[in-house]
Length: 257
Ligand code: SAH
Image (tube, rainbow, N blue to C red; front, side, top):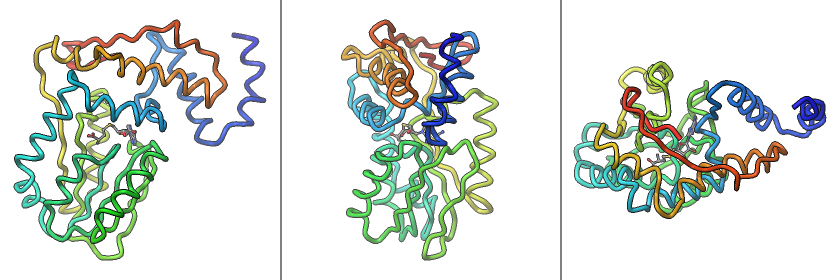
């Protein structure tokens, strides 16, 4: 450990400001017991690709369930949101569910996908620009738990509505989740709205199976974080010596991996 620290100044000097924050968060997480790493770092380009594969897995019921809800109730959602809205998605990924909403909204002014996964965000936004010529697509690469400025659309919106599907709120501890919801209220402003998707508590075996899939895609998604630390921070993890395990904690009502 002492040897590794002496090389840090040289290593740090080569990192981009974002990677310096990544390094700082990794070091802080690895110094606590049990060791932990923030979920948002799962998503580099490879991580976002792996997450898309997770959404297709037999065991990962969340995406299918939410798509079915979108399919069934999207007209009602569109009516609640109303005309000329600006839709802001927190953690937009591939914006698959969002397309249902964009198709159902009356005269939407703009769609603002927000994601930390830069390349994936912009690739998805290009497809949306092509498919939704009547909607201004304004991607923002940002950490939605931190302060960020919303873009100003060319046409004034009647209201700002935040879309936060995928049960991503479950990545946060209760106090962090409460802080994030307050931030969303502030961001959407007076007359704003929030459309959020949250998974319900259910049979533990079903939940655990969703995060321990037979094909090992979720395991690869997790281990990609170690590979990312190797790639970006010059770490020397041997992912072959780590095993993936996802357990549901009933008291906290959440999955821990
Ligand atoms: N909304 C999509 C994707 C959910 S996966 C869906 O429902 O299918 C979660 C997404 O949130 C990923 O694309 C990830 O890159 C992004 N994400 C996670 N934490 C984030 C953070 N703190 N700030 C911005 N984006 C984040």
